[in-house]
Each structure stands twice: as C-alpha cells, then as structure tokens.
Length: 249
Ligand SMILES: NC(=O)c1ccc[n+]([C@@H]2O[C@H](COP(=O)([O-])OP(=O)(O)OC[C@H]3O[C@@H](n4cnc5c(N)ncnc54)[C@H](OP(=O)(O)O)[C@@H]3O)[C@@H](O)[C@H]2O)c1
Image (spheres, rainbow, N blue to C red):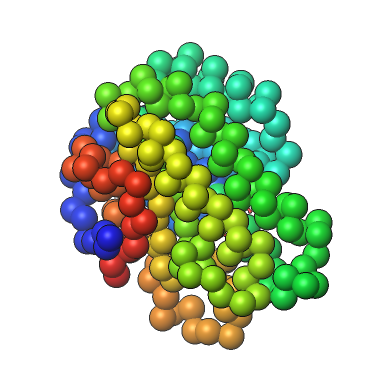
C-alpha cells in the first residue's frame, strides 16, 4: 500500500502523543523527529551519539516545536536490562507510549553470502533485528496503555524481494517484515497497530554508502518524506495493521 508524502501537518494534531524514534539524531530519524515535534508529539529521541542527538534537540527547540526527550543508547550493546530501564523511564515520565518507530539501522556490507564477514553479520542482526525485537517486547505494556498505539518498522525493498549481495541488511529486513506481521496478528485485538514501511530512496548517509557513484541530488530529502510519518502516527492511519507500506514520492 502506498502512503503519500504530501500529508499536510497540522500543528498540535499529535498533542498528547508520545512517540519513541530510534536513530533520531540524523538521517530520516532526524527529519521525522522534527515533524513529529512540529505536530505536537513528545518525541523520545533514542540514539547512540549524544552530540548529534543534542544538535537535533536544539533544532527542534529553536523551531518552537514540542520539546523532545533525549535517550542515549547504543542498540548494538544494549541488553534486556537497558530496555527494562527504558520501559520504566517511559512509564514514569508519561504513563504510556503511543508510537514506537524502529528507524535505526546499519547497511552492513555488499558481499556474497558465501564470503560475508561473520562479525558484521552479527552486528547487523543485533542492531537491525534483535534490538527492535527486545525494544518492542519491553515496550508493549507501555503501548497497551495508549488508546491508539503504533509500531512502525523501517524496512526496505530488499527485505521484500531478495537481491544478490545485500547480505545481512536484506536478511535483517526480511526478518523485520516477519516480526511485524507476527506482531500484527498477535496484537490484532488490542489498540496497537503494527506495520512496516519501505521509504524508497532517501538522501542520507546510508544511501550514499550503498550507491557511492550516484548523484545524491536525484534522491528525495528526508525532510520531503517525513510528513508521511506524522500521518502514520496520527489517528487517521488507525485502520492500517499488518501492512507492507511504501512511500509515494
Ligand atoms: N536511505 C535510504 O535510501 C533507505 C532506503 C530504504 C530503507 N531505509 C531505512 O530507513 C531507516 C533510516 O535510514 P537512514 O537512511 O536515515 O540511515 P542513516 O542515515 O545511516 O541513519 C541511521 C541511523 O541509525 C542509527 N544507528 C545505527 N546504529 C545504531 C546503534 N548501534 N545504536 C543506535 N542507533 C544506531 C544512526 O546513528 P549514528 O549517527 O550513531 O550512526 C542513525 O541515526 C533505516 O532503517 C534504513 O534501513 C533507508
């Protein structure tokens, strides 16, 4: 299903909603943080680099948007105890969570499976699959306290149709699609809606690593795509559950 990126953000439409974004410091996560805060959501900005988290925090505050919350955490090293602490912190501060956006990820390397570096395979699976699984598991109770909860996994075309040499990244996105679909069935009778989103090409560092020779100017900016994320966190997207979404640019 295609989602329009021309969603008109109304200031205050996400007022009272609490949304956690992983990888909120830069790239697509930064752009969605700005738009979610513009729409009035309290954004919990999770990332591993405090300096760039603070830079994005300053941008949000300087723009006069809803003040976000910084949550420094490295998803590669985080343990179930870190996620339990995160759940306790979210419930202490807000008493609920309305949106969980699994945006952080790494590309790994382009290589045949036969030669794929084992250490990089483990890192990619830890950040792209195991961390979203643990984070989701710990935060379902907080999402259950929302009247209208959302879990959104950032996926990719290579996680829906296999492509040679995309290695751990492609396999991790297939796993995310499976995790999302399973959750959407398990949570069907709750207020939590679970979907995946393939954003298509985005002008970010990840895209540059994957396609170093291409002209980046031809790729949509993260800012041009982020309004769709506000829609996906709003009550208007409530009917969507268990969908494989794609952005229409
Ligand atoms: N760009 C595209 O064309 C494209 C296409 C399809 C799907 N996607 C998906 O869209 C999402 C966002 O991608 P992007 O293009 O914005 O990528 P990006 O520019 O490379 O940003 C990735 C984000 O993930 C964070 N991250 C990586 N490892 C982490 C860790 N161990 N702990 C915490 N945070 C970590 C990064 O933080 P640091 O700054 O600390 O590294 C950064 O904030 C990803 O899930 C990606 O797979 C992107």
